[in-house]
Image (cartoon, rainbow, N blue to C red; front, side):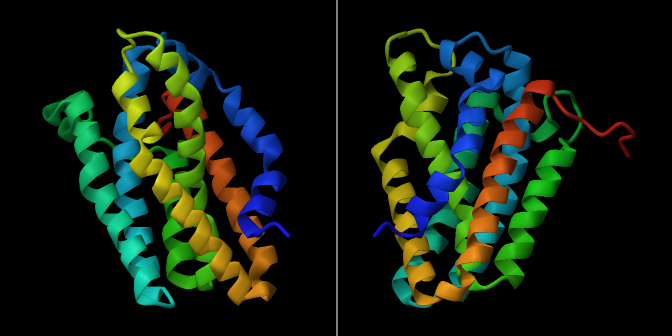
Length: 225
């Protein structure tokens, strides 16, 4: 019988098809994405990763055993240091700090909504529900990275090749596999939580879709502070 992650993946097939059809990813894949749009995405993703790392750290503190705790803590460190360094290298440290326009970047409405959901779930929901909420960021990026890598490898001068390679890398793919494994274990340990886990996984997958859509539109607050 399939595990929780297989069931959740199948249940979100429509959302994942919508993700595959996003203009942002299509243009990223063929290299035609406007650099200003990519910069906006990187700025928002850097803000997202800081809060995602917080969510993973909360999850590590609530993990049922040392092995699970070590994985979530290591992943939190990866978000806070490794992936942020990738963003800094791609964007330029000064642009990253200044938001690309001389001002500090501000989380867009979608970015703020997604990160608020993740942190709140990691802090207050049952452990298994929290694992389901953080899983799509691992798995959807691993899936997208693997698909886009084929086009990037065929174009040596692909402008976004390094970003694509980071999420197709064996290390990231293995992290996604391990996150699925731990989420499946959490579901097996608390089967009554599966409906809430399914909802959390689906909502986080929807936020992945909306995050990229918002990036392509360069979403901003209508009345910034």
